[in-house]
Image 1 (cartoon, one colour):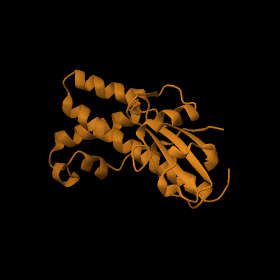
Image 2 (tube, one colour):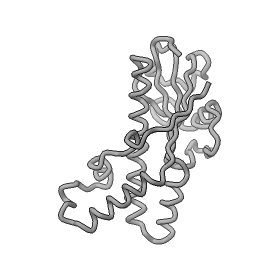
Image 3 (tube, helix red, strand yellow):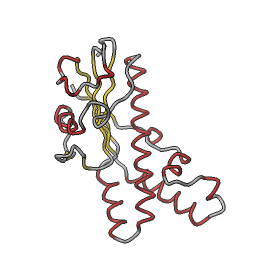
Image 4 (cartoon, helix red, strand yellow):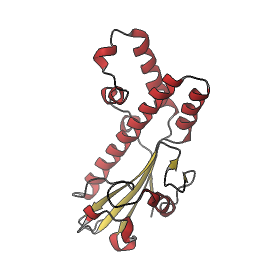
Length: 189
């Protein structure tokens, strides 16, 4: 059974220092740059306003999954949580619109914000799962280790997620979408 989870705003609001670090800048270095700081804050708030985050989650017994989907590091697990998290299409559309308008700086800032917001969402959902299931493996995504990124298509289909396109390369659209797995050593559903 697939569970849907709509996070609270604080679960996908990125840490401002980490968001700025992704832009290769430091908060201390822009404090005196009032206009730049104001614009960063405006884009930060705009990202929060336009994002439509949701998580699709399913727990499977390890033997229900194809062996090529299971990371080498999942040795000994009994169940696997598969989840897809996305910020929705609106954030992608806004970034693309800014690029088309020639607002490359704003698009870059918003893209960095969205990447960090998606990671914050994944970390928050990871914590929720660990509270529920206990000890598990580290969070893992296709495209790392021995799991091909093209397994994203299988996960999207398994979770029955509509509105997510998986290209033949395994890249997903909207771009601010990830699939993740966590292996559990005990069987609890």
